[in-house]
Length: 404
Image: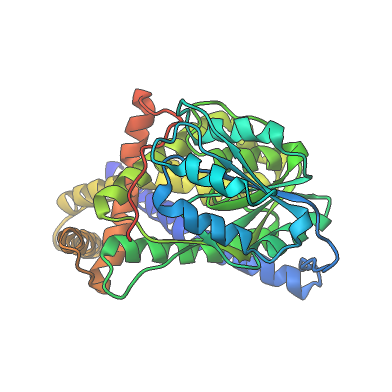
């Protein structure tokens, strides 16, 4: 009986991991295909005369190395000049970011700067900025990213639908051919995420916006807690909780470089994971699938399982597999099956370890970096949980360095 229970536990854990990373994508892909076949596919709004007034908010703490390019990029966006405002929030900056923008403000009436002496974190910068916004649409973007020229047009067109409350742009990681596994793995991850978000949008709603570029109906903004780690996620999900859809727009994208090193990427991933657990603890009602329907299904499948379940399944699978291989008779077919699976797992983690060694030397070998990045992400999720449990996180980011 104990062996049977272990076998059941093993396969349940395997199915959870498979569903999280592969099964969910296949399932919603099939649902979307069925919807299209039945003539219920979602239409893309594309009214060229729909140009609502928008405010572009850019929190910028000590971003002197990026801010000039960000300003030029923002002013060059393809959107009617009378319909767009720019609001930079530079509170706490000491590197000349504020002074550069204030000088530019003298020549550009659409540019506004909100500054202050104390650094309070990104979410507080957003909370300070929102009372100054007078436009029906607010767009948030990071200072270290570049937007494509059509980003604003493509992102705001969805607000022609009154059921849309927020729109998430796409995050694109630009890597060079000789980048380390950190950059390559990050880029691969975001490509897969983009694929899932396209399906999520067609099915009902994406579950979380990308902080690098997302837009909301200004009237729907609600200040989130000051210690919030994932402001973009919380803001967009609370809008979705109120019955609005959150749309993914891949043709509005923010370009940024990958993390400078695997240590910088680890710092970022652990904080995001801690923010994931924080968000789950504050969005408990979204687990009620009888109340929120498709939104709950997507939230649980795409976020909760990936953040809070699967990372802990992986070590359990290895442990249970090892116990089964030890308990089963060496002459049985079951032993051969579970020993083969155990060898496969050990081989996978050996590849991940080799990927780690290569990453530390800034080398990339494709056969190693995918197992490595997969293992790395899930290990960071476990570390993020521990960080969340200790309560050491604040809403102020310790910025991770980006590649030049």
